[in-house]
Image (tube, rainbow, N blue to C red; front, side, top):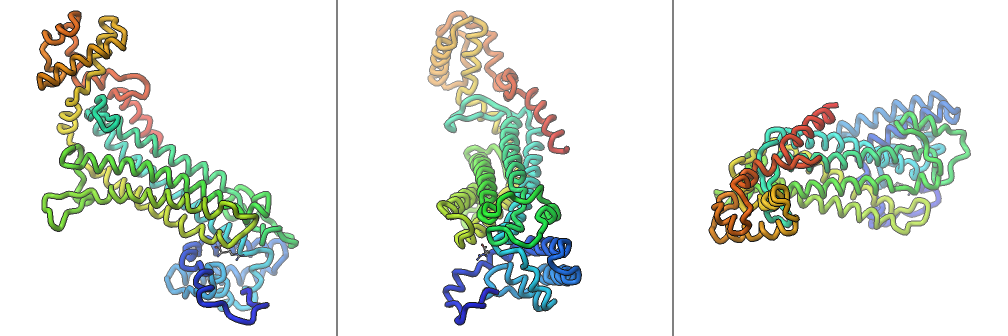
Length: 456
Ligand code: ARG
């Protein structure tokens, strides 16, 4: 394609380091869509004849069919997807194929293909996020009243409802979803027609190709158009953040499904056994989701590093943008699907969760709040009194609600029997009705709102 001024073939290693076809063959659909839009525009503006445009479009359809059927012979010598497609087009239609690359360069071509790919991948991840949100929502609905220990420092803090905990992830995922939407909105401008870097002298219509390819408008600056990869970086940031959120849920599943916690049981379909220890049910998928976040985060750092310090406009460094981006999106693809599968089929053990929530003096704050509310004791002092009650319970080897009233009275004489009503885990969660709180009434409201939002 560019051999005119060369008399010798590239070194084998040159070819190996230069070729990107093994990676960028994934851009075949986008490449052909872009070429078809470009050819139609060239005909409309009179740069090529309608007959040539038709031959090009029909030929590209044949190439695409070959690729889809797996019959296409990808060649490393032809470097990348752009030259592989064009070369095959030439074999099929002959001379008109050579007119397709008028007023275009591989620089705007690859910027276009990659942008189209990232945009569509963001859209697919958004749909998968909704599927996972729905799975979490279904668990939330089944367990709006189920009590679990809420943790800080992984130490029992206060009882919460399992539904509330599920909805925390629904919220996180919604921010993840809209981060992709924001990235799409910003990347929705076409680089096609920037040509090599400076634009072109041909009377092209960039608005026409932008519209045909689903963009809002053409990018304003040709130099920026071929140089910009922030659309991919921003999307990788969205991927990395989402993967990091999933890693936290994955970690919780690993903890919850351990014999020591026993809060949830993963279905057989989402557990693996051990070849030596028959009792094992390992949460491998959760562990892998936890680990795959490393890949996503790595990809973001990798692309930032590749792009850092590059002068305008195109440099070959930028060819390394694709593999890492594909890997991150693929990792998130599997992670979102695996997580939806695990969540929708896992069985929470309500009794275990409740027993655990009742241990660890989880309602100590409720006792302190009662002292403030009923006896008008300042919170700091109430905290101190409660500390003494916890110590007494610890020494007696019982839970807070099981302390004899005489013991409580010996700590603070004004305490009455009425205090026991607030020391159960159910009373505790039911009382936390502040907006965004864990009380079942608030959780049910949120579930109703999310159901409406996610079905819209
Ligand atoms: N394979 C190249 C890439 O992915 C396409 C653009 C090549 N442009 C060039 N001037 N060599 O970046």
